[in-house]
Picture (cartoon, rainbow, N blue to C red):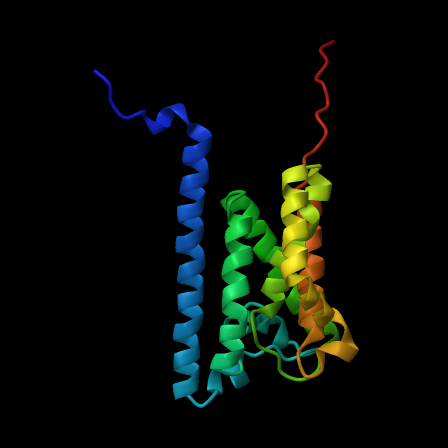
Length: 205
């Protein structure tokens, strides 16, 4: 009797589908958390920003590195970061949870450390994560020697490449170019660290 073909015959398709589902859940949950935090912050008249925003070159500010991307100046600020964060994060997540967490961690730390070192005033916002994930997607194909990833990078650059102007001090204006620059550097470093290692043959003696 004829019947439906089991997904077990197509493990690659099943893996991509499961990663896509996982990516939507993780990114959707993360953005939902940002909106909840923004609601609480609004009700508290911005008190969370004053307490947990990143304060450059202060000892306490080192702890703010772990909190400042979760906060935003206002709802419009959050909305401007949400869509690219979901898009870029989802595309990175398709390569697996380990790859996503590595790219996110390096983007987060790169952005935070750069702001702490050379930032101006209290800084909040997830745009450093956006720049980190975007830069990761732009360069990983060259490190991985993957034409498919390079093609995706070209498409993304054509659609979103103008945001890279945000790493320039004279262009960014009141926006934290330091967070953008540090996040982008973190994304490139993550792509470099995750590149395939050459296989060294094992020899017996």
